[in-house]
Structures are given as structure tokens and as C-alpha cells.
Length: 481
Image 1 (cartoon, helix red, strand yellow):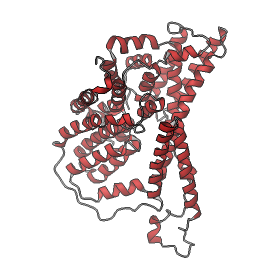
Image 2: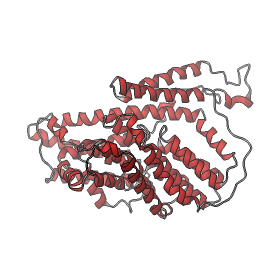
Image 3: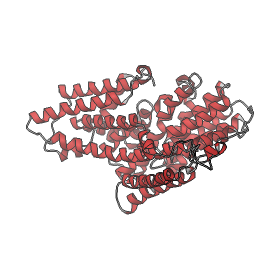
Image 4: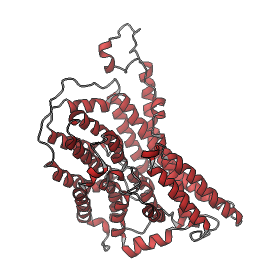
């Protein structure tokens, strides 16, 4: 991540977009317009400064959650002080509770998903998949398509960051000595992982936010499958001819999954099914289904721990089959998987949502909403959302759109879901997957290496929008595009 390509003027423009809806203001005792006073300017400066530290994480090595947590507290502290000084002591409290409720739903959903991913990683599910791909003897070109295809298929279930890191590990294990192959494969993986997450309700944080908000129902997301596929296929087809036509030597051994790995994968799918059922049939938040699913893992973890016999002191212990059993000499502990969740990321989401909520409560929504969704029109505005997602994190951008809640057809809501999800592929710094792979394949996958293929990626971005407008035109309710 680099500050050079995320200039402060762009941040200022995006902060204005991050306003909260007037619904929040209506729910409070009173609303004071603070946009043109010292309060608004001070809060803007605090957020921009905090986001500057987020951008500079690569150089300062300070976790991104720290500055936004501080900024959230300062912004809401200033707002609460101003409102209390004007006799409205509970106005800020009401608004901030609304923010915290939205964050809590997102937090609990992600915590369960991360716990399952960590459990599968500990059971060596991903290691086994990686080793089988490495030992398959694929040519560089075939591996290019296999890793891209798997990234597209796995990211709708797992997060795009985990998927990208897994596929990059395969690429690095096979083609470490071929920088061109690694660079092109990493670009392909980033595009595929972001595209795969765009058509699934839980494939990306932004789609999860849209689903939990109730704007788009579960099955409607899958109408974005074809546009998302096009978004990946178009640049991949162009890059295919630049892949070296070589075949590396295959290895002979592959790592086996530990005992219980398959059961945990099944329980993860059952957990997702529970979340969908709770939301669709019982009209409960999806996170309640996920938390219920966490109980599945806890009970199964209890079973694994009680049946743990993989110890050198056990009479039937076989050191050659240790990895095929419960794993090493340590019993399965589900709470260790909870502890290994991406807490920095979860705290970052808290800070961003509270910062955005505070800036919106100050009163920046009306102007931006008028310009983007009235003057420009929803199609142009939603295409711009995707472009902005390549420059800043797509989470605050999508959160802003959801809280502005513009009057759009279902087709336009699907469009902004698509663009916010795949827009981050335009630049290597536009998504968590791209930033992570620049570190994992340091020196071979770079910002400028990705930028060189921007025309091909942008062509896929435009093609996916065009395909969506064509195949999903019935969702636009006859409104002008």
C-alpha cells in the first residue's frame, strides 16, 4: 500500500461520500448542521490523518486499526460535546448506538467465518490442496488457469484474502524462479478472487453488508455470477498469451489432511446454510445463524478433544501416521481458532464504521447524494464507486452508499455491489488480496507490474458492467440507465 497513489485530495472527496443517511438524524432529538464550522473541519482532518496512517502501514508497520480507533473516539467525542453544549445530551448516543449495532452484526458474522477458516487451516485443508496442486505437474499456462479458477470458486465461500494467499503459495512454490509467471499469476489471482467474492452474499465484506442490510436477498446475488465471471475471464484471456509455455517438474509427495478436516468443512457449509435459513425464513440477522453454527464447531471440537489419542504415550501411536490423525501431540482447541481471528481487521472495521458514521452525522450526506445519485444518475455514480474502490478501501465506500440509501432499482443495487467488489482489482493497492500478495511475492508482483495490465483489467471491468446491464436488465424496472 502506498501513499503516493492515494493522494489527500482524493481522500477528502471520499470522506464527503462517507456520509450517513438523514434517517439517523431524524432518529435523534435534533440535528445540527456542522459541515461549515470548525467541528466539521476538525473531524475531517482527524479522519484524513488517521487514514493517512492506514495508508502508510507498509512503511510505519503500525497496525491499521490503531489510528482509526483513536479517530472514531475523537470524532464522536467532539460531536457529543457540541450536542450536549446545545442541550441535546442524548442525540449523539442514539446515533452512535445505531452504528455499533450495524458493526456488531458484521463483527459476529466475520468472527465465526474466520474461526472456521482457521480451523480448516489447522486441519491442513489448505496445505493439502496447495501440495496437490504443486505436485500435479501442470504447465505454467495450465496452472495460471487452475489457480485463477480455484480463486474464483473458493472466494465466494472463504474470504478473498485467504484464497489469494493460498493460490499465491502454489504459484510461488512452482514458479519462484520465473518472475514473469509469478507476476501474471498474482494479477490473475487478485482479479479472480475479487470477482468470485462479488456474486456471493458472504464472499466479500461489501456483499455481506448489502445482504445483512436486507437490500438484496440471498438468491438475487447469484445473478451477478455471469458478470463476475466475465470480469475475470476477459483479462485472464488476454494475459494467457504472455505466460511462459513451460512445464516445471512435478513433486512426488503431498501433505494429508488431519482427522476431522472433512467434517469441519461440512459443518462450515451447514453453518452457512443455517445463516441463510435464519435470514430468509425466520427473518433474523444472518449473524444469529452463524453464531449457531459456531456451536456446531464447538461441539465437534469437544468430540475431537475427547477422542484425542495422538500422543507418544498412547499404545497405538504411530509416528508415521501422526498427521493423518488428530494432529501433532496437541488436541483440537476451538478457542485457539477464535483467538487467531484477524483482530486487527475486525477492529479496523469498527473504527472505519464509527468514523464514517460520525462524519455523516455531522451532515455531509445531502450534497454528495444530490451530486452522485441525482445529478450524475445511479449508473454513473455506481461505476464511480468501483473506481473509488481501487483507490481506497471498498468497505467505507459501500457503507456510505448503504447509509445514504439512494432510491435505486434492484438492478442498480446489484450494479454497485458488483463494482464495489471488482473495482479493487484495477490497482494492486485496491484490495486486501492485492496488498497481501505484494508482500508474499515481494519483488515479483509489484504495483507497477499490476499497473502495466490495467487496460486489460479495465476492459474486464467495463465488460462486466455491460454484461450486467444486458443480462439483468429486468431488474432495472424500466428506469433509465
